Length: 255
Image 1 (tube, rainbow, N blue to C red):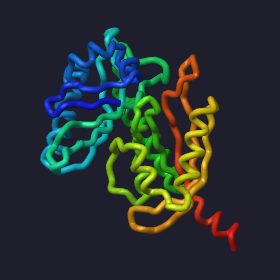
Image 2: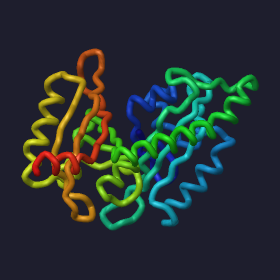
Image 3: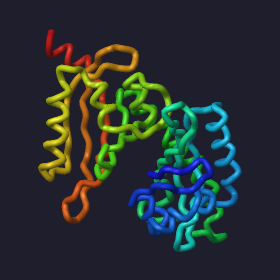
């Protein structure tokens, strides 16, 4: 994840992005996204940025190639939203990059021997992602990630999650309080305590059930589950999880 100024400069980056780009934090903070974007993909990226600034879109997603510090090329799925200040004026971009290289732990080398692979990869990834999105819609499941090193527990809600909660479309970072505000008042204290107990206990698995009040005012039951990523010392890094709508099951249990 990263925060990017309106001019394109990185102003905040997390450790995972540094590892993905194989560049130290201090180096990335001296660069702009243009410096780490493959030249062949830069025009498309800049055009989508213009759409955000002009108000023609609230968010965009783009598969593009990144230039790593070791000279290799890595494929990433970039999702960008525009953050605004208190007066509603554009302030900065919030970017989320997912590594979608050919191999989960590797990357595609920038040489002529992988030309066919780099041409075929985007179409295959797009088909796989559409299939995954369809499965999530059928299962009433929406994914999210939470940066547990951020004091505000900055969270990222993916499209299926936002649809599940009847939220405005788009991917954006939001603090822990935004999640709490969507919980049913009678469930807030218990749900928050369950989450904090899991984070403090050292476990890697998190599960919870509670009611939410959707953006359209409807109350639904949610099953939350995920994995808590920790470093070798046991310090929490990230929560990766999903919400599933279990309203029908809850109603059957209560009838």
